Length: 165
Image (cartoon, rainbow, N blue to C red; front, side):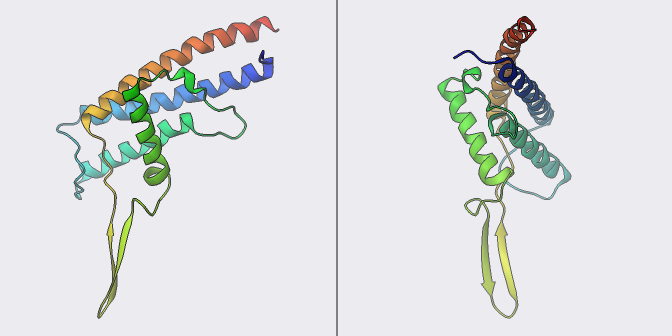
């Protein structure tokens, strides 16, 4: 089936927005990698921990936007990702984290225990907001691969759209 000019234009817009989100992911990953030490799962109350947690949250949400449904735009064509088995596993993990922890509060990741005693309290264990360094490096290479594939596809779309004028 041959795509219409309108379909090509909408896909071009989707891909442009996706590149913007992937650029954000890349910036967040590079910022995390520039920091000293590994970013482990242990939570502390230092400013550095919370800055890293904010960057991790922002990168997971931005990454997820690329591959999630969008109102008024077509779905991202996954064939453009071109992921290896290892990259696909990392992608699936990021999407799972997005859906259960970072963009939504899923009961499976937040553990609250109600303690009844002389006072009514609860113990809340938050999930770690961390991605290990080796996974950050993998995410960086994945983002670069997808951006390259998008730019190639946009070149083809641009030519098709211009030819239909």
